[in-house]
Structure formats: structure tokens, C-alpha cells
Length: 102
Picture (cartoon, rainbow, N blue to C red):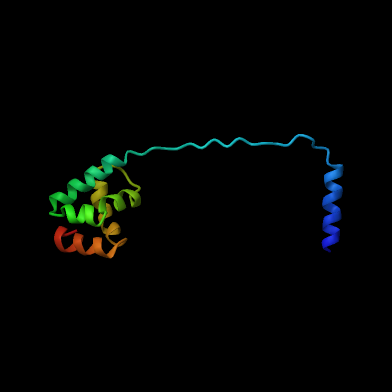
């Protein structure tokens, strides 16, 4: 069966009528989101709740939230997403529940 496949491939190559290779150009489009405002709003909410430097910097909570979050950059939407975000990391969940009251 293998020799038949090889024969078929060889014949098709030799009898192919396409002489020019078709090339496709792929253009990559990068969409920049304004993550800085999401980070600022998140940090502001956390600081108001008493979650400070150890939470934000020590646990990389801001960075993790910005990578995880895909919603609107407004305070109401960000607050609404906290319940789901807490489930992504046990340490963040513990801090947000005990100190922040979220």
C-alpha cells in the first residue's frame, strides 16, 4: 500500500499543472486593551476594602486580575467579577474573604 501512495504522489507531482506556488500573506493584528485603567480600578477597590501592598504586590493580585478579567473597565463590572476571581487562587480567596469582605 505504501508503494502505491509513493507512486501516486510521484505521478501527481510530475503531471501537476500548477507551476507557481501560491503564497499567502498573513497579517497579524494586535488589539491593545487599556489594562491600566482596569488595574487602577481594581487596586482602588482593594485599597478601599483594606487590602494593601502584601495582597496587591505579594500575591500579584493586580497582575493576575488583569490577565483573568475580560469585562468592561468600570467599577461596577469589576466588583461584580470578584466572586469568580476569588476562585482562581486560594491565597487570594482567603485574603479577599477575611480582610476585604468580598
